[in-house]
Structure formats: C-alpha cells, structure tokens
Length: 118
Image (cartoon, rainbow, N blue to C red; front, side, top):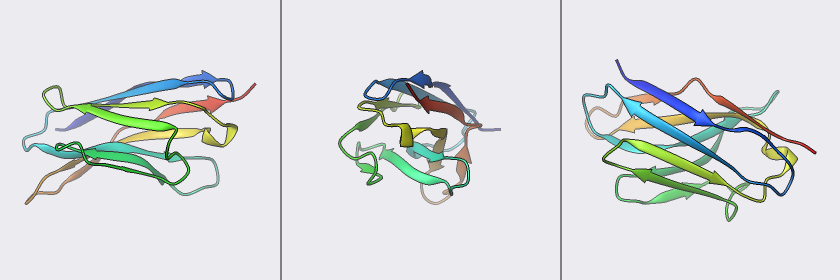
C-alpha cells in the first residue's frame, strides 16, 4: 500500500511564508512525478506545482514566482516553499505522486490546510 503523507501548513499572515513536506512510502515502482494541488471551498482542485525525478518543474499561474517545489529523490520526499502568501492562497493542499511508465499509478495525500489571514 502506497502512503502519501503531508506535513506543515497552518496559518500565516499575508506576505508571510510557509512550507509543506510530503513523503511517499510503500511504493513498489519509482515515483516519477510529485507535487501539490490545492482546493479552496467551492472551487475545483487546481495545480500548484509538480516536479519530476529529473528536476523539471511546472507551476500554476497563480503561484508562479512565489512558490518553489523541490524534492529529495532518495527520500521520496517533496517540499513546497510558499512565499509572499496571499489570502487567496487559502486552501487545502494535497500532495500528489505519480509512478513512472508503464504503471503510471497516481496517489493523493489526505490534504493539509493552509490559511492566510491577518
């Protein structure tokens, strides 16, 4: 059984910073892509950013330039550094993990809440 566990998050003031971590365990096949999605109340889940084993990143337009994703392949751990936070960044953040070809299975964490408020 693959486990995806997020940690971090919480409350920050506008303009502040927060960081999230995500650890994957129990995977039989290598995890090719890891990343984060978020979902605010009443909204669909949307891309925050992803990173491949090779270090290629992809970010959502709303966070480009403010958030940074990194990963430790040996530890199967991804990190999300969030800076210049805005109230509209408030959401539940979900870690995402995807196995490489040919399996391609996708896994989600339980989500961790991030609130940006003064």
